Length: 251
Length: 251
DNA sequence: GGCGGGTTTTGATCCGGGTCAAGTCCCGGC
DNA sequence: GCCGGGACTTGACCCGGATCAAAACCCGCC
Image (cartoon, rainbow over all chains, first blue to last red; front, side, top):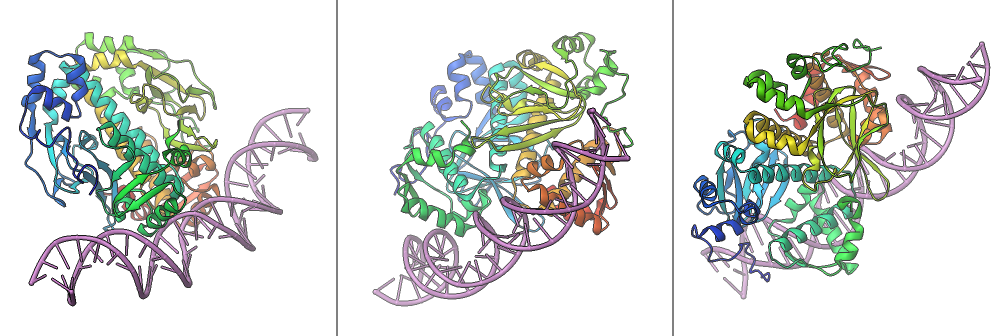
């Protein structure tokens, strides 16, 4: 069991009802907009009206499917979600893993259809934002527009990093550090990570073979960089990992 | 010499002054917004005031540089631009090539600094849009906001494609077809392409060695798929290329 | 506790594409 | 016209990581 009990839930397990505005905002990708930009009650209520909390989904269930009309984006509330594309040959390509507070679906905008599937990796709850409504709201609340712009921009930068030609070591080190940062941002330990996904998903995401991931993790462990126990990973030397990943992380 | 005379200029060489609104709009990435959404004069004038046409830049000159504060996005008016990242090791990684009418710089939003360099591949003229001003305008003109959202979304999808693990053949076929589509959209021939960039840039962009690009192009030629003469490429069988690239292009 | 399926590890082998090293071609300058 | 340097091609060889195969592990279930 991880220190977090193996379950991603943020900020706290009991925050499951609709809660008050404060609670709502700390959980969601738009949190900063609401909390720091000081919008009036009216505006916040608009955002609230627009959000639907979905019923929990279980591992393997699909949030949306490739080809479905793009209608909404989703913020993860609890659990972890992966996005993937299945190509003509039936090969799966994993595009990303999403933690609580992160947004999925923005890539559907361009073609007006989702270009990938989004799949729950464990039990997941989500907030659904109707995109047409959200973009109207964004014209009234510049903070929302900016947040959306920034999030999309971030996705572009991230995707570019994944696309670079890096070695297996560089990729895996960068992957661990990236997860570490994102966990830390959400109040979890930065050095004790619980990987929710099977090795094969990590491998696929990094465009490596599962065997390679296994081997590199073992080597990292033998070198004292990390300690692996099943899906628990303890980063023993984030510094040395950072050095390995320096080209990927860039600055 | 290409049928276009080797120079990308759109819509016409003499359209170099500020021209009238009609002219301006057909040249620019926001063209559709202006022409089809039927904004009033006032709104279009706002967009006009915001744009600055830059002086021509020559091959090798930089539009913006990695690390500079993000202040504006640029639409290519004439010529071709590449974006690249130089990593710690000094290795260059090319992120994209941009034709007239395409936008660069949106990826700078996230960190408020440009995450890459943008370099002219030949003689280039640009339109500069101050981003703070543009985003204010976007709150008044939903079409602008939507265009920006869509363009960023497109970049995310494209970046993801580049990131997939595809063979050299798949990559190169997809690259040629992608260029073909983008040239065609702009009124150039879809089957006779003039590659402005050296082989080494193509290779780098596709994460291949220049030698591999050379060999694959030759094999494509031997198989009757294309005809290569220096930087002129004639697509003889777009259909068979599409079949090769089907996994990358995905429908 | 023992059985069965999925996940992970480990070892052996293979191959696509990278690297290295020569050419060859092309074009611009004198 | 000749020379020089960059871009491109071609061939020989090599290596990182994929693939194949088999074992070990893990956990839920009867």
